[in-house]
Amino acid sequence: MKQIIDIISNEVKTAFESLGYDQKYGEVSLSNRPDLCQYQCNGALAAAKEYRKAPFMIADEVVAKLADSKTFKEITMVRPGFININLSDEFVASFVNEMMGSDKFGLEAPEKVKKIVIDYGGPNVAKPLHVGHLRSAVIGESIKRINRFLGHDVTGDIHLGDWGLQMGLIIMELKKRKPELCYFDDNYTGEYPEEAPFTISELEEIYPTANAYAKENPEFREAAKEATNQLQKGKPAYRAIWKHIIGVSVSDLKKNYENLNVEFDLWKGESDANEYIPEVVEYLKENGYAYESEGALVVDVKEETDTKEIPPCMILKSDGSAIYATTDIATIVEREKLFQPDEIKYVVDKRQELHFDQVFRCCKKAKIFDENKKLTFLGFGTMNGKDGKPFKTRDGGVMRLEYLISSINDAVYEKIMSNREMPEEEAREIAKTVGLAALKYGDLSNQASKDYIFDIDRFTSFEGNTGPYILYTIVRIKSILNKAKEQGITDVESIMPAANASELALMLELVKFNGVIFSAGEENAPHRICQYIYDLANAFNRFYHENKILAEEDKARQASWIKLICGTKDVLETCIDLLGFGAPEKM
Image (cartoon, rainbow, N blue to C red):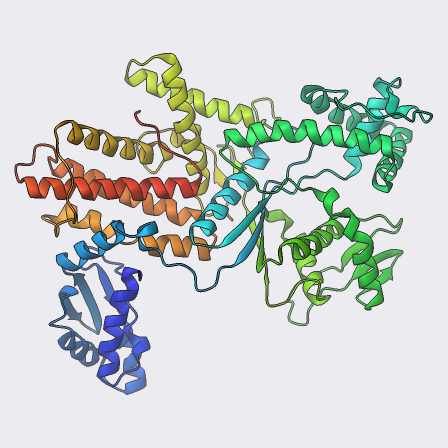
């Protein structure tokens, strides 16, 4: 089913064309003055220059041509040549009915199903998730869901940091603490234990200790570098420890991401790309893309059109070791081999833009990735505290993500208990659902590329542009529908044309759904969905306050309203699922 804006535009374009004007001038948009009209067309102003005719004269002709259209209740010319449009109530109601009777509310399947890989998450193993990991997970999960809903074939990859110096540091710290372990006996020939020699808590303490010790002890750091080198060359004992690190870390990460309602299709890491690095390096050398510069192997990626300096992309350091760029290029090679994606989207901190620009340019220049396919950098801003600086704990440290989630849940729990009496267990369960909505909506309602202030009081408010307000609206609709069911009120096959302004306003918000979801997907912009459901929730609440649904005496009208608000609930629930959270049954 076509978007409503396209249906209106096509009708106006046909009118322009039938009058001898280029149909492009009939493009319609939402009105920027909703107090005057619902939609508008400004094409007559632009057409006037081409056809050397006063814009109001062109607009008058178009309005006259469309005067008998059943799509419009009112279409008028406003000088100097604007065309103001209000839709007929019957047309709006018929569109809503078609939406409600269609799969995905009439969202059209894509002309071409794209294969998309989304790289998001990116935590390092052996370290706890902290607030810096929030945005990548939350934004990436929503973009994944939106693209799948649009009909594309989407694969989400966590891309673990599991292959750098941190591995060597952990191995050497473990050797320092427990030298008796079989992994450090060069004469050991048996099978290595299946059970890890550490818990996640011990592992999370081992790495920072080792890292601090290495800064004060050059010999220990060199030993860690050598351990990393031996691991990457395949030393069995170190590979066994590495597998323990991965196993223990991934098990813990899955629990934490589950609390965020975030799921990955792939749990691959930098290590998975390691086998591709030699062939990438050889390919770049043999084909003349890479050359030595001060001992390092680099690829020039600067283009003639650049207005700022773009440094060469380093492939190997002077000591012959690979770096992040090497791993990221090798990962693109791996993804091309496994998935043949049309696009790879990277949801990462915007401060990594130069790095990914170099990597993408290198891949396109060297024909590692087809130039007709897309490598997309989706850089996100920083989550800041009320002081405008990156969010920290009270003592200035980086807050663990689980503590942030817990603090949000506690704040919501206190608000729930202050308003009503409820068993603690039930209130805690509701607080988890509402808390997740507060956290995710608080993040996603901001444009991803911009920094934002984390304000727990505002995010957990049940009023205003917040997650809890959206959920409260859904719960309110559920309550009305339950009461209607108890009273034996059922909906009807089709919704009637609007009886009043608030009902029409609600319908006009509903019909925007397809356009919003499409643009959110095209622009990788979950914040568009947030703004939409806020407007939709406001429209419903206005309608609710102005119309006594359950007390309505006109039974046909009442049944129509029940169907309308049921559709509103379904649209809201679909949208919050695309944002990555759900609604409770009551609040």
